[in-house]
Image 1 (spheres, one colour):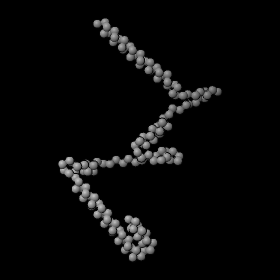
Image 2 (cartoon, one colour):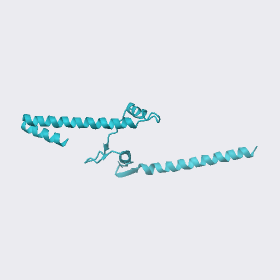
Image 3 (cartoon, helix red, strand yellow):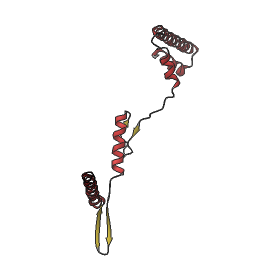
Image 4 (cartoon, one colour):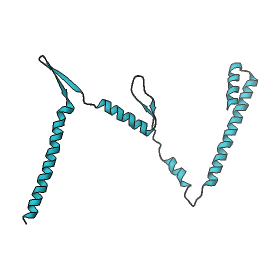
Length: 153
């Protein structure tokens, strides 16, 4: 391959007929060598296939399936981050992106001469606690009623 590249570079610089012939010969030798290598590999592969273990169908089955491209992604930062190629790297990048995009923000409102700061997490926390207590008390009430119902019979 290196010989072909060198011959092509020489021929493109000189445009001499002898250099063109050398390039064509190198190109033909490379094509012949690649064809022989591919043919040998295929012959070896076919000789290892056995009909008893159904290995003949595996290559056909894999060829029929369409391959879905899974391109790498990169962080949308300035400067752009490194490419994430593996599934773990992509998941980490996506999780980092979601944590940046969906974080509750503190809002500051000006009412008259006062600035009022609202933190959504602090506002929602009492409701979360109330829901926990309400769920717990409903569960307790259900258990109490079912115990009374079975004890009265």
